[in-house]
Image (cartoon, one colour):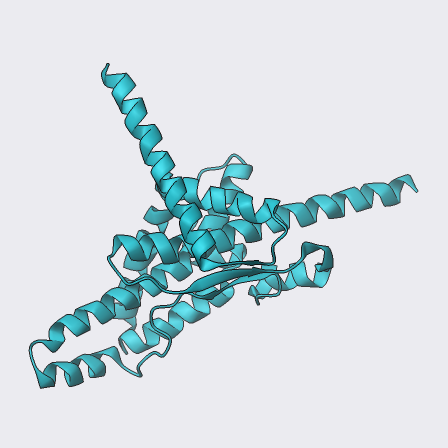
Length: 244
């Protein structure tokens, strides 16, 4: 009887830890979609977080998430600036620039959106990785958390989608790899930013403490903006006291 009780406690601890990881993962995606896009002056895009009732989560669900991240637990619905990828971005650019020089701005805007979508996909597993590192009192850096490591943080489907984007970017593998490394660094820097991390943490805590299965776009945006403003105000006050 006592042994069964211990097993139940261990299972509950495992489920709690798993729920925390998922919450940070999806909060990371959401923060990227709003804050990263906003910083790049991209248009707002609708999205929402759909979160499964954890009371109905099974061991099979946990295993599926850890191996494939197949949206069995939670997902961000919407949020992509580019829904339909062209077969070739080079081809698209050549076709657009044939018509007029004014189309060049459209090409630049498309590339900004293209890159932002990839960064936002990478931010999710990176946020989960940073949460795990902080929980385990470990370092969070490029050497320990690289692109390959993201599969250990529910990033398999995110990476699969990223590779779909990159296939349309260039037929040259070296160019694709260089672009991916550049965007991974941008995603890593976003997560490692103190203000952004405070916003991700606040949203993750809200997910964990709430009873909603769906969190709407307006609610998420308001919470993220309030968190950023609160962080910046605290920093200004601290600087004011420091400067005397």
